[in-house]
Length: 341
Image (tube, rainbow, N blue to C red):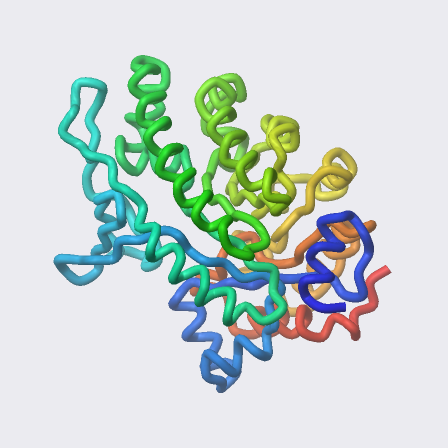
């Protein structure tokens, strides 16, 4: 089977010869991993053989000083701390309903075409997703402030709906343009969970975010493409809603949060799970042998009758020991030697 065959079979809840997998790295850990393997980036990527690839439709990138990044919405991120890939927002750009000074950007449709054509040329036989990170709720709080947007949902709902409508308008232009090309689906990044539940009540999520997500998902599904959503945390309370509006693949699936057999039993006929090997606990703290056992058990539970793309719960951070990086990577690469029953 090709990589594409495996992913599409898994999403169709069919068994495959090996389980499709995808491993991504933070920039720091990627450089460490190249040193561990003594390979160039090109050599390592070929050795790894990920089954999925993504085209980022997030732009920006200019910086007035080292360690800071300004994105396409004008949000500046401080990356001088421990988080070198995302960072923390420097200041809110929209202070509330009485703030009319902010102007929403227009997506660079020409650049979307250029990026997509380039990615299609270099994709190999991977499943190729267009990606919008900080897709909806995250984009709103990056503009308005995290605590502020949660308060505004309760106190200024019309203002929040206006902000979300403008974000939705922006995203739909990207989606429509990207779907003119031969991509396989869309991957949306938008965290709704925390360690012990949602960041808001399910009803609050439904009244503010469900309809917009349904519209974005619908545009993708109309073209017969896959829809994947990344969300950290426990989002059990809205998983039925996400299935209802067309989600195919749920990415992250933190095993320190979810009971994996129960998750598979309750939602495995409707969702494909992507991730589930913990970057919070197992990867940084397990012994190599313990990690091997965890990987095998995770695959055994989640890959039954398809429906699983194996991988870490997030990009691999720099605190994972080199021997555990080798365990994860080499197990994925050499699955034909696994004894998983």
